[in-house]
Image (cartoon, rainbow, N blue to C red):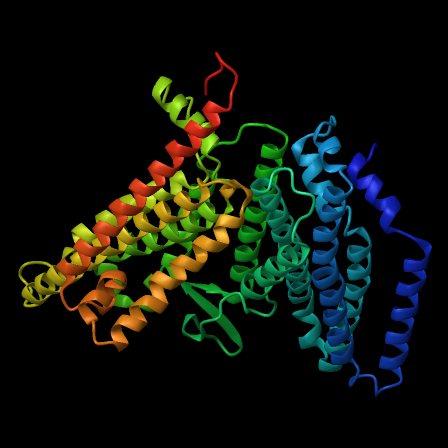
Length: 485
């Protein structure tokens, strides 16, 4: 069997004799300290704690660092471009970059998983036959969750590194600390052990004498297999995202709706908790539309900041769109599919309103109509502000030097100014009507907020188009005679 060349190269670099000796010394000292610290039954929790702590330090903390540092070293040493020209496929490159630099951390993590298993076995022996009967499935689920935690954290780190490479083409370095930080954040938010994936206690209840259940679409699921399935979903999505970005690095074509498809699955996943936690929410038809609008909008923002936003890429997409709309989809910006779906669900939820789920025979119909007459302009105002934000970010990116990525920080600064500092300042000065233009929920007159947000959207989009045309014309003027874009 021939190993992946990228994986084999990392094995030679990572698996050194000094590291093996250091790992053996740590394990011997850990076991000796635990055995000397108490009686047979008392040290069982110590083994579990030491195993989990060691797994976190090696696979999560050190592993994410190794993934980010490995990519950073290849960019600095100018070997990344040579690897892109090699004969390796995208999947071989993906799992080679994911598990190659972290080979030793996974080896160390495997030994710490053995410590966890030893601790569980000793604890079960103390509990007697009842403890041994429930040990097998519980231990397997615990180890599977820990393994998924590690893969997710490292995959998000690799994903961030690939996004940085995509945004900063030709850069000599990538932000290693940022890549590792986002990997650790994904671990803390989604892949925490012992049920922390579902942080809300409202979703958990008791089933039987000692079990816990999770309500999802009004169906009660055992907590452990549900959380395990959730972790498989998010980990698989992170690995697939790495594969898609690796395909782009190798100049291969992707299906453009991949990110939007994941957001649709995420919206359906989250709506299941809403249905179970709110019995009356299922009658309001606009609620799932509003939820999907929020998911697609946040996903579009994330894709917008992750995209390159090169004016020449936009020119190529528009040119392909005019010639053949179907062939233009692979050239579409990363944010466009989710942005279009966000607009669709946002407009649908605003039009339907709260009264869509209330029949005319109920005495709540008049109240719902009044509620909609106030909230619909606010909903359209939020859609207009999303258009403004995209125009602002794209306009800054289409300026001179914007494609290098520095424009994103300035755009984030201006968005924070428009959403927080400016409305708060105007509100403190007693200009509530003007503050509502930038923050529609503060507005007393929703129609006035809609007009203000719409005006900002038109101005931002016009500014972005003007800057894009100026940048495109400047580049076209620099080309030799007879060459066009």
